[in-house]
Length: 292
Image 1 (tube, rainbow, N blue to C red):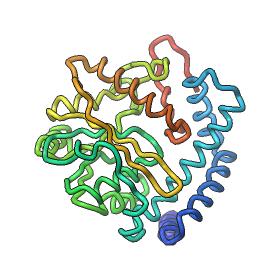
Image 2: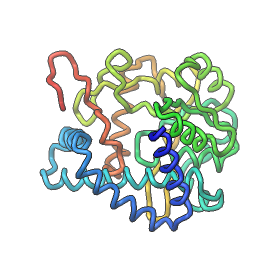
Image 3: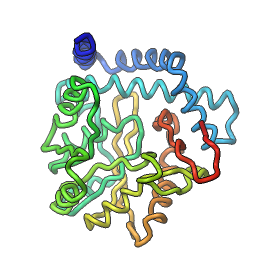
């Protein structure tokens, strides 16, 4: 009962944040991020380890600074959900800018959207569902807290005819919807265990990586369009990139390695906005010691 009350209180606070000027929300996010950096010691160590492995050329001070900035952007993006999910539609549209190859998402052709784990993931999804006249789909993992789960689901279904698949829906349902012309907003740059992954380089380090981008594109007979969302002072810029030519191939491991290689070029433009708090190297190849 107490947990439910705290959850409802937190959602109420987010609703209030949704009415504040963006500069105030970002300032609160900066403060929260610094507090999390100090208190969330395990996640701070995870982020630091990831950054040292991926950027060995950086000094200890540079890694520390980058880790702090990562926590700040993470907290700011979390608080931004207040206005993304509960602010006025006009404010949301004003703060979200679509740029790049928007035509790639027009029409009815099957599309798998490669949406890397930058802090602006929810902003990118919101921009697409609000501003483009297509039904977008994505895959959702239910939260243990039912109050928070309902709030997150409502936020992500706020605009358009958005559809969120759970694991219970199965691959066949997702692929059928993809072939019918509903773009799939996919987040495959994660480590979900060696059983569901292949080991491919990520910044020169072998990383267990889900090969779902290649597999869904092949099964859905779909093109792959990267969408990278960048946090800015005025909100978010959602950059739609040209579709990848010759992807997928007949080699799912090579496809997944190429995905990571291209992801690195996106991260290099804004390394402090990537989701480094995830244990990207939790699973290691046989004989390789734990990174954490």
